[in-house]
Image (cartoon, rainbow, N blue to C red):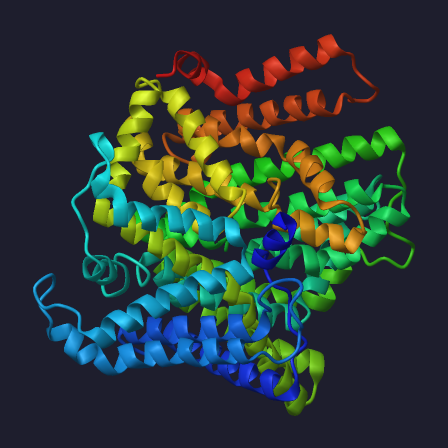
Length: 616
């Protein structure tokens, strides 16, 4: 009985869309992508109107493309059609009422019955879409917070809050910019959308093939070439797409079978791909959704964030690359390149034009700090590349329409996650639970910085076991970040610390989406893959602690200190990987591995080692 209930509440599966459903979804998706690209180019539309469109489109697509649970038929569903129509009708109602809402006095003019019905219905639709697309775990977390908002006034002690009526809660959660329509949804719609569109069109223009050819030309002829190609190509592609799952599906379809054919086990091959793809969410110039949320939440310019993120991301990829190199040396694996493999010079000579949109993206992000416009402009430069690749205007038009369609479908999970995170953020704002939890964390850690960081890490990892990265960061940034800031940790390192661990949720069991995607390709157990991923990415769980105490690796400080920090951190990563793999030029013993571990940690911490140990 219990298993049946669990199965009923499990996430749905993709529908086999009929002609009618596919046409409706495609119309919504293409129109939505076109609309938000227009906004990215600078066409002005009041943000609330844009968010109304976004939430309506995302929910409608979610219901039409995802079944209620894994056992439901994948064909047409009356409930899904009804939910999709209501999902569009409610934001349309809000749009019509917006002029009236703008005249309303906050907390004085009440909500009418239609407003309340629409608000409750929208919350229920977001929760159901979350259950279908992400899972019951996230819904359960949100319900706990909502129930706290309803019944928290019955508690005693520090977690008591004033009694809130249904109207009070609806007003805060739905009719202000502090809840569902808050910063998380705004970032997804007005910023992330443009980058996802750029990545989708780049993929349609052959960008995935280009990155694979570049990686193969660089490292394909080395020992263990397939695994190294996976690391390099996934890093290059992931730095643009910002999506670990998309990266795994795109590059992993080439690299995972290639790794298996040259001697790696399916589990290890899938783990290499998933680990390398997850790092793309940490690697500039695009990074992932959490980085955009960080910029919006903190007010730190996105260009500043990506400059600070460069060295930690490169250290991450250095550790993964070196680990697969040592594994290849130990197992004496063959290169992947053949005599017909193009070298890097040949690849760039024939396909140099793929560098143009990437250069434009980086240049405009760094110089004008308008990320959405930069992504839209870079996307526009992909159109001539499509003409070079496909030749015929009709084929180019179809490729763009398909890419626009795919963009909104890819945004569904991100949009739903950001919407449901807004429900929690709104509840936190109403009840001041953020301050209470931060105080509790600080008291629990007794003011010890290291212990506070460890508790914050546990919070982020636990949240990451049931949530996608945007939701993890959105919640952890309001739950854990204030406690870190109370320790006088600077704003950028504190939030980047959370971004790192939130991004690691893609390979953290039990809900390791990147590992599941890789497991599908490799036909291997995703849980075993996720454990192997965590081993490969062990340095990623250490680096955030290092840049909290040693901000030189974030390019902060005097040039000499920055250079010293980068050199010692690089040496520390190398020592840790040697210790982890137990191999240098030959297998090494336990004592040597322990010594290398101690040396690596000391080099990473640098002059902050004493502060780290003392918790200051």
